[in-house]
Image (cartoon, rainbow, N blue to C red; front, side):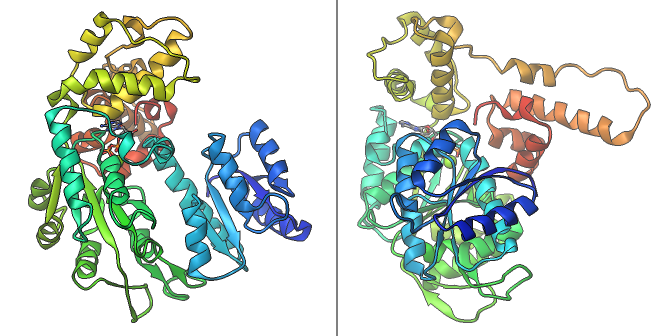
Length: 458
Ligand SMILES: Nc1ncnc2c1ncn2[C@@H]1O[C@H](COP(=O)(O)OP(=O)(O)OP(=O)(O)O)[C@@H](O)[C@H]1O
Ligand SMILES: [Mg+2]
């Protein structure tokens, strides 16, 4: 397990100490705080990867701490510890924006599992600028008045009230997650949970447990019952992102759920009835995914009752000026009436094809805001070319010399990935497709080969 900086918040000195020892023994760097206020001070001055906090504390409790962190723009993931082993308190914690919860008493192994789960997810979510979206969810977040977007708003309005599953298709960065949230927020379920699950981010062998939960003893490491995300989201919406990355065997279980609306925790034979809305997304054409054997045909038919296909940005370029203005306001440090880029710059942006779609545009604006400081925008702030570090990674190969195999193979692999990312305009989905590997394995390789390949756009 990797080592991380973890902040432990608990008002009871003994509990604090126990957690500190557990985490140190697992190799983490640990900060401790006795209450929410102390925790906030530590968070302001230190690079903390994760907060583990007791739910109940005098003065500022765990939920209040979490709310304050989010209000102050701190996206650090939070695990809440609750003493009451009920589904309700778990739901409450998740509703307040916790990444996970732990029920007392727990042991080191459980703690480590929760940490791994949360940090793994956090890394993936950072890639997707999820925390930002979190602050910005719902209808108002949608920008664009093109015919294509108006048709999407209309579709969302139509499908929202129904219970039937929705299948959203669209290239990377076209707003699939935004659309899924809009459907939830326009539905009668809006006051219940919206639970996103990225099927590509969770290791295949853990996904089933994550979705359906498990009972104590179902497998090694299953030390107590745990409810799955489906049960957690009961009465709300589950968003299955990157559906085609879900193992085929699990797709069969999903189909069964869609037919009878019950789930079975691993290691149990009791079926639990649930009332859930499923919204799934994929950046492939669902039909192609069926042909490639990545999506079960029967599941495809079941999900495709209400299909929504998002239009790539290059086919609705008239939305670019509005999106540009929106992202400038969204990412300006203060709402200080910054002026729009010149007509010349806008023209330059309109000429580009935006393979990473709206997300690419958003990232571009964020970068331009940094580059231009307090001055006006100019062309050089919007370099519409692949990242220089990637170009370097994809530079022509030097002649082969004899030496150890592993580093040579890895160096070659890193270059190939750099090249794929360049061709894909920074889109990891496309790069993975070009390399014919899963996004999950691309993700692991990017982590392995370090920041020069990962620090591109999401
Ligand atoms: N029409 C839009 N108006 C405003 N913001 C948008 C719009 N479409 C997308 N965005 C923003 O662009 C970013 C990417 O959107 P989102 O994550 O929904 O895309 P996605 O289709 O799920 O991408 P991926 O397939 O890569 O996961 C988000 O920050 C989102 O808020
Ligand atoms: Mg997405």
